[in-house]
Length: 402
Ligand code: PMP
Image: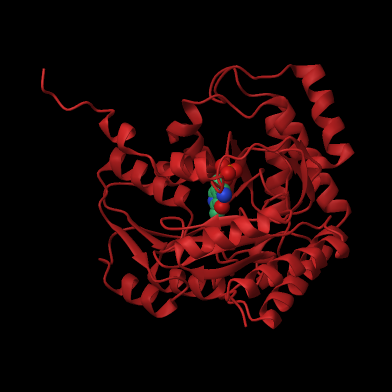
């Protein structure tokens, strides 16, 4: 048979293997010990400046104990979908608490943040609807849109320039008055670390009769006086109609939720394939997220510390001459541009015990390669100063900064 083998592309894909042989392959590196702000890899200690554990709660003894107790009480898995046997009282407790935290009527939890976007956006789409999305929104939003288009044959997908309200207005003006619209935006953009212009989006949404969907993955626990996210940051809880977030970042767990009006959440619960056809959040994940939420409510000083750390790191890197783009949060990208230079910079910092993440296209636009650094409320000033020193010294040697 001369039929082309569907695996042919796999045999031809050698880029990762070559990088592994040369020793600088940055991805899938196993961590042997995780202490939150520091980790052990290949027997060596690293300052962790590349995690989304923003409040350090995945190592908090209270969160660990809550997860342990939940496993002892309910076992390791719910062994089924939320729709059927996979709903525990703990799911409903978490949903009620998180809906209250974000100031919405109701919430439903998914097994990951990725599935939350997949399941919420695809469920809410319909054939003649228009999805209007920021060009730099997270991949899971785009995948939710693609899944929804596959189910509904909706082809009305519009991507506006990042945080560009004139482009958003132009996009809305070109949509038929009778067709429903949802505008989708990240609260904090995951690679750029900047904040969406939510009040302006709300105004445009109201003018054009559209709904607003907000992804708070990097905003809850990070923005606002109490860590309630982008809407608290802007002081108006009606800026978004649907709010999603993951439990894998500030909440020290894994899973996600979408919150909004009870009728809308009930509709999503009955129409979302990624919710209905996948097993539910496990007892340990639920208990960890619940305990983290309780701690965030009781200890808002963690959020303030994280915000101060973000301010410190952005100032330090800017003063050193780095290009940090439009960053406004504890996500601080060091924008390099060229892929090879970015990998080289990453590897030299890694060799000196600083863990960061090199990010290239398609996660960022081509020629915009960057080192994504991100910080935690539990980082000490000593660790942060060391991180600045390592990044500064390496960048100087590589002529990235003066
Ligand atoms: N939304 C955004 C903006 C994200 O950055 C991520 C993950 N990085 C997700 C959703 C998906 O969340 P999870 O990793 O918890 O599945």
